[in-house]
Length: 129
Image (cartoon, rainbow, N blue to C red):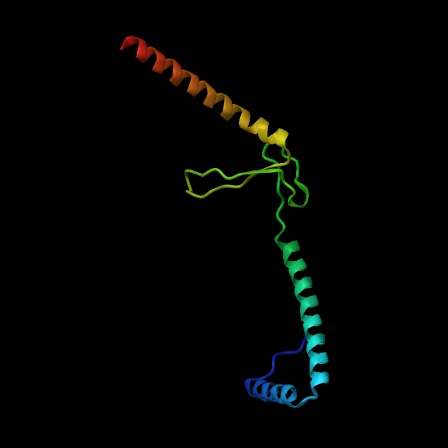
């Protein structure tokens, strides 16, 4: 079965009809047992294939703040800002809340400064009016 080239179309047709004949004529207990074996084999094959695919797809994820590798994709925080050049969201991973807060600190400070400036400007405009 494994390592064999696929059968010619005519052979496949005859195999298909032979298989259909088997399922229609085999004793019911035997057919149910064979079907259970096929399902078990298919499940095992699916699990093995999925594991292999996951290993191939695994990408190295690094923390955006401390640059350490995040093992097995166990990141604590994910930020997806919009890249203005591409118009796509970028994934930025952080390994811990500490790294997330350190990375956000300059943005938070700038936001507070802007809000304070806007509040001051609004108060000054009210005084003038």
